[in-house]
Every structure is written in structure tokens, then in C-alpha cells.
Amino acid sequence: QVQVVESGGGLVQPGGSLRLSCAASGNILSINAVGWYRQAPGKQRELVVALTGAGITNYADSVKGRFTISRDNAKNTVYLQMNNLKPEDTAVYYCNADHGPLGLEVWGQGTLVTVSS
Image 1 (cartoon, rainbow, N blue to C red):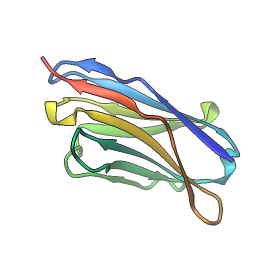
Image 2: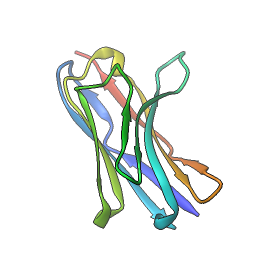
Image 3: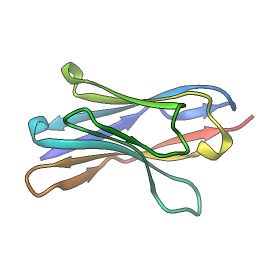
């Protein structure tokens, strides 16, 4: 089993930065990929960025050049550095881990990011 827990959300002004963390526990070696998703009020959940075990990334067009995913294997943690935040980035951000041979998915509880002046 794998569990993921997000942290780092908060209120930030437009143009500001935040770093989200996704700490994984359990059978870490079974994780195939980790992704950050977000869900804004009244909208569907959408992919922000995915990171495979081979280090391949896939960013949504709306965040390219502003958001960066990284990982610290020693801490079993994946980070999402968000720069130049915009009001439209306001959402609950979720960490997702795809693990095992069947590609089972686990989700964190989400962390709220609010971009407002």
C-alpha cells in the first residue's frame, strides 16, 4: 500500500510563489508515477503535472514555465514549486500516486491554494 499527504497550501498574492509537498509512505518502490492535480470551484479536476519514475514530466500548458515538479528520494517527497501565481491557479491541489503492476491510484486529501490580492 501507498499513502500520500500534501502540505504547503495557503493564501498568496498574484505574482507570488508557493511550494507544495507530497510525502509518500508505504511501499515506495512500487510507485510508478506521481502527479499533481487541481480542482477549482465548479470545475473538474485537471492534471497540473506528472512525473514518471524515469524522470519524464508532463506539464499542463497553463503552468509551463511557472511550475516545476521535483523529488527528493531520500525524503520520499515530491514538490511542486509554483511561481508567478495567478488568480486562476486558485484551487485545491491533490497529489496522486500510481503504484503497483495494476497502476492503482491513491490520492491525498488535498491542500488549498488561494491566489488573491
